[in-house]
Length: 153
Figure 1: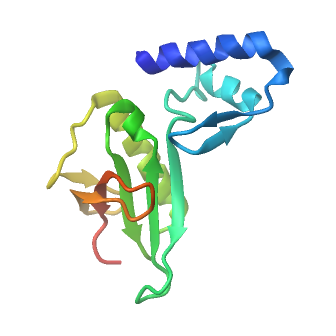
Figure 2 (figure 1 turned 60 degrees about the horizontal axis):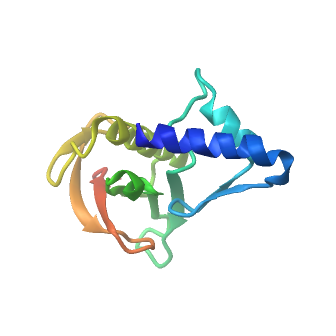
């Protein structure tokens, strides 16, 4: 509800400044967005996204890993909703599918609150459930995250 009020205030401000606004910067998520794209994301319907651009899904390649192809993907911005950001380390899975999974988890937690905790499991993109634990983030800024373990590759 609070986020909806915030979005309405931003939309009203965009109405006032019009084409003078070149971009919007969400500092907590690090997202810079075109005002037209932002407006489209707030239109009712299929493209409506209540947490965009407040939450960002980021991908990092890990250097000097044993396999040479390890990745970290996380969210940034969930703290705006008093929730932990999410983090997953993976090797062989498709990054686009992991990004979709993290985006879906972020929406689930936004809708339901802090309901996935340390030691819980969640259904991942494979046939097995993935175990979650609280951990410190591997990518900055330093913060406590919900680390999701997809198991062995």
